[in-house]
Image 1 (cartoon, helix red, strand yellow):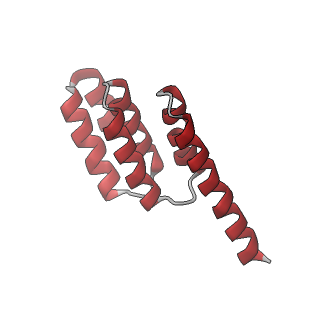
Image 2 (cartoon, one colour):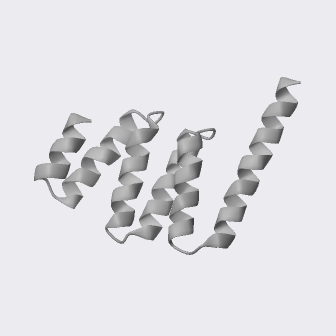
Length: 103
């Protein structure tokens, strides 16, 4: 995280993205790198790229509540309400599947 903080303060958007992409690749289960990278892309106007990053985060962390909530927030903030329902439907399905497997 220190490298990320340094890039945020002194680097460019591209160099920050490179550090976050490398961290996400090396530590795919650490959702913080995915989330920060998606947020930085979104704030820079790259909504579609932020969605792509969160999709990759889903693949690496399929049961991560912070990733699901970040995706829902992105869609809410960009006015894609129909997509939010799809996300929550998937969450509901996963919860039911997990409950079934535990019983």
